[in-house]
Image (tube, rainbow, N blue to C red; front, side):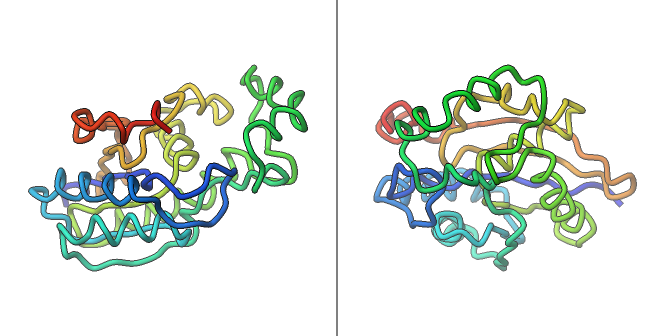
Length: 211
């Protein structure tokens, strides 16, 4: 039966710095999407999925200009629900939720965001999407999703405690590639690469440190 290769791609840079607002890409975000599209063009992507949030949809469609594959939205690939933090700036979050942030950084428990989700919640809704993809006929699939989703799923694949998913990259680069493989018989996933952004290293303005 073989295996299916799944390229998890974080969406491009969005047009707002506020927490998890549903907005589209900025100019740099479209440039990032084009670079990851070109990077994976030789892989002959057969199917593209994305979350239903605008930044993921726009990234998928822009990258798919290089692949011309069938495209489908999967709402369960949406970003982790930040609850009461959504729509706030980093400064406001630091002031209003400082105690929570300090507790979260201890990684002693899989704490849900205030009135939002935790990593286990994300895994519960997003992992079945990957399992369905593993059962379909395509061998090479691109999945455009979000940093919290990619880190949560990767933690699960590696057998980590969900609350420690933040150990997997301080900041995932926009339009980075995390490659996993699913064995079609066992449905077991393996991690092949994580947060690969070599396609953007010659354009430093597109990296997170310039955001």
